[in-house]
Amino acid sequence: MMNDNRHRPQTVSPVWGHFVTRHRAFTLIEILIVVVILGILAAISIPQFARAAEDSKLTATLVDLGKIRRAVQVYQTRHDAVLPPIVDGALDWGPLTGNGSEYMSAPPTNQFVGGDNSRKVTVRNSPDSALHRDYGWVFDPNTGEVWAACFDENDRLLEP
Image 1: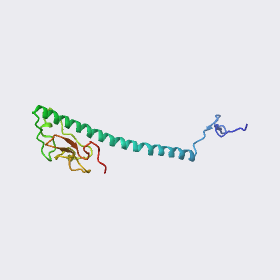
Image 2: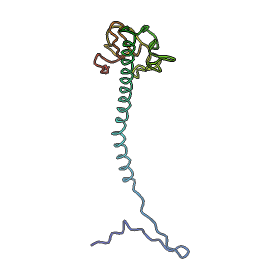
Image 3: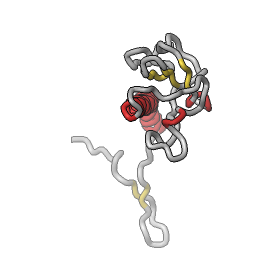
Image 4: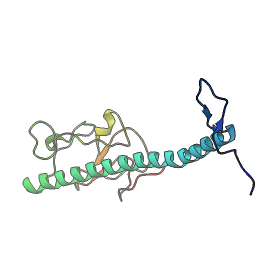
């Protein structure tokens, strides 16, 4: 068996009566390998975080959509099948939101629209067919149906 001293501390001549030990340091190749491995791990994990952010936007929008739909149903039940008077282009849901409203404390926000338009309601009888940032919600005054802007009739996000 060959004596391999590469991994053992090397002793240097005595200094003031003490032996000084020198430890082996990492080589440039070893450091580069670690950096490459860390880079690969970062490349794998960063898209996961981006996807998580997109999923949270989707969940938040669908939760708000459910709140609006329930508020419209409760309003309709309490007012003898009359739908709430929603104004086209309004930034709120009329009697469903605002101070003292018993339905929703604040206008919901569509996370895929952004800005003030994310709260804006348009009055129409069908969901969107394309992505846009003009308004956040669609309300059908004839049926009481509600859709999130940028979503289809099955509450799926429209593709770009």
